[in-house]
Length: 427
Image 1 (tube, rainbow, N blue to C red):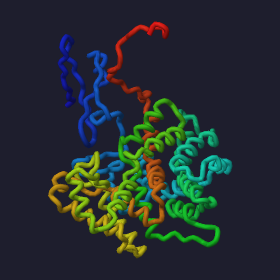
Image 2 (cartoon, one colour):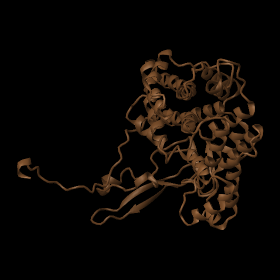
Image 3 (spheres, helix red, strand yellow):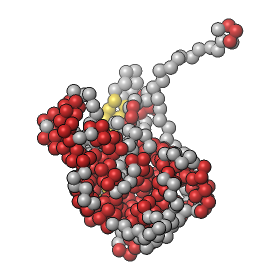
Image 4 (cartoon, rainbow, N blue to C red):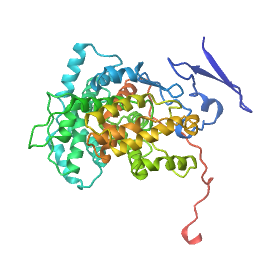
């Protein structure tokens, strides 16, 4: 039975607004006719109470600590799947058969090369340029090299663009790292897995053969899975808004990368390591946590804007953290010991427990990435690499919707009322 709510507005007829039900999660009030019927806008800074679109891709229940990709719990995917299989799931809506997966993987891995002239772009950047600055510029430039896949109204063009982005983003990300460190670019190897190939492009040298460690490859692949999508966050909403104008997919993903670059969005794990460095030693943890209670310090990597309970990705990342450090013989790493002492206090001290300040995925992922040899400046680049499939899935879903419109938020204007211009000599 359909539901609706009635809104009484003084001097006007009562408005009846339909209530829409999703498969999971909160119902939503359809306010599309509200402005026409009331002459008013709704006001929701940060869109914290507004459903900006309809989507079938990702579901989050922050109160219950649930994250589903296309209905599959993130814990199951992180345990039993791999990143390219998750990519297929996010794009097409279903897990692939063995034949479909082989074809998908083969196609992706045979399009990892970038146009050779694209490598010249890097020479225009300073050696100390931030890798994210290069990512934004180079990804945006892809549209100048792949002009045969820019017609967003053509399903075949969209498919080609999707494959190109998933295939080439790791190559570009590795090139950003190599350029920043004065190292020669490594060409991709099609015989390696997606994640092993990325590690090869990052860390191999011409001097000797490079054999990716399978434990470390699996850890990084899991990071990719955990960060592949996260519903309508700032960067995904940016991609959708840019895409609603008809912009080409390469420009839309560049816009998403730019949004992710903001420290409030993609820089959380970097902030965790900075916090650990500032604490310095395990002996300082207790005093630091008391300082957090007194609001002298910020506790990074604990709590989450969406999750009011445990971040479902955190326990997976915690396990991965132990696996990596054990594999590398870093169990006694001072930074890791410091982090574990922070975790111990936060999980047992009533102050943090009552406020549900549990460790989130960023608390552990920074430690893992650092142990893998990935510098802090590359952390957000890794995030962008993993999130590309989420962005492109949302873009594709939106473009495929015949009812999609260009995004055009409203505002509450609080500036000057109408006034007349006065010539400068009379002011």
